[in-house]
Length: 297
Ligand code: 2GW
Ligand code: MN
Image (cartoon, rainbow, N blue to C red):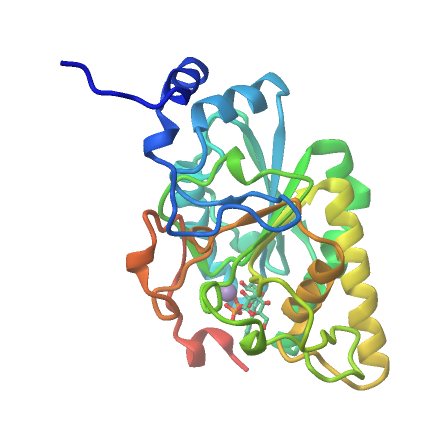
């Protein structure tokens, strides 16, 4: 005896090999009020998406900064990226470093390149972190625009632990911070001092985004990094620094330039911050660091 199926069942079967009806998640928010999808495992079909992006022969740029002792994170970062990041697509790794000779030689698959960009070092770690905006901005104009379609900007003290593919790509995307995806607006750690350019009023803001994973088309990343860098410089001139450095400015930017896609905390996870049971996949994980030794303050 056959099972009675609702009338829309056949339609779904016709359009996709997987039956999304039975996979549809109801435990997490899937779409923002401005119709940006929130990417969770089980909400997309990577076969279809891979085909779409392969047809466009898309190249993805991945920017990562390894200044001073942080070059030590590169080996694991690159090795795991080769296994999990944009598998089957063209990838350029842009490694910003003050120690080009210490960049490890990791074997790369076809269609994937490492580009080492020598940049200056700053004595304060806050400045190292914040200046990423300026450097990504300047290289967007100089290089990325000619070499890639999308730019993905991430922290280096991380390792890939599961697939991170073209499902993340969109004009402008940010990632839900693992410490705040379930928190109320009031508790978001936005910059709250009106004197800072990163200031977000208590009654504004949608999500708290992580500084360690954002991106978009080269044009959108250019605009974002330009705005954030200018805001950082205005703060600096006033002798003020936002509470979470460029992460605060990124959050301010996203309040007034809504991302077209949002990545769930699967894409930036830290076991010390969130309850891992809520995740089906932990795709990109914070590597525990010995703060005293590595930070070298
Ligand atoms: C050195 C001392 C203390 C803190 C950072 C650094 C440092 C950072 C460094 O010596 N060399 C370096 O290359 N970095 C780069 O900055 C590196 O790419 C690193 O991933 C990034 C951010 O620093 P990190 O990862 O140590 O800080 P987290 O993990 O606490 O990052 C969050 O908060 C930051 C702002 O305070 C950023 O917004 C970051 O995107 C967030 O994930
Ligand atoms: Mn980090």
